Image 1 (cartoon, helix red, strand yellow):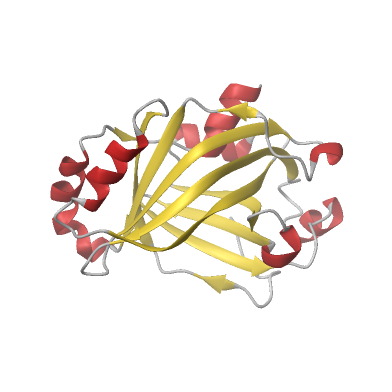
Image 2 (tube, rainbow, N blue to C red; image 1 turned 30 degrees about the horizontal axis):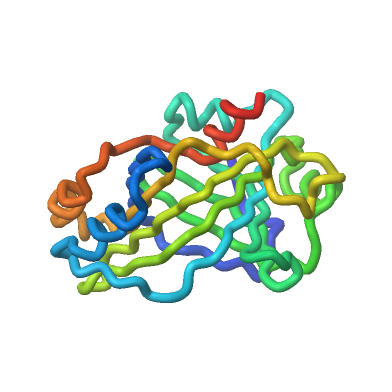
Length: 216
């Protein structure tokens, strides 16, 4: 059972749905952006894009990965995340909890990377350890009704964790880009229309799972 009792000053999002689409990174970028901006949902880019860096944690027997692959009803991912090139400005610890088809993200701001001792104190039964880095460039779009948030992730790269490469960008490129659409459950009614206009195939993509598949 995953709890948050040990984390103080933590921010939690509402439960929301999240659907993903993958497409080959060789597909023309302008064509994909045109599909987003011409969508009848009226998507507009809401602020400047940025690079996203994540260090994912798992147990020695890869419980988080196996739960994801099995589609376990209650599951979670643990990661340290920061934006652009300076971790000291935006470092945070995140727990992405999934309950069936809905997600909730819990975030705690950090001043430094969590140590093995920190992780053991937080979740002594899990024995979490750092596994893999994932980095990518992300652009942010919002529908005209403010109900649907769309993100476009490109130049996705992976690398295995080691203390020596903590500050080094992951080097193994992923062959696909990812579009994610996030929305509240009560806004389900327009999702099919939005997604049909993108003309892309729905996917159960997990960047962490893809990292493990490509790295190990």
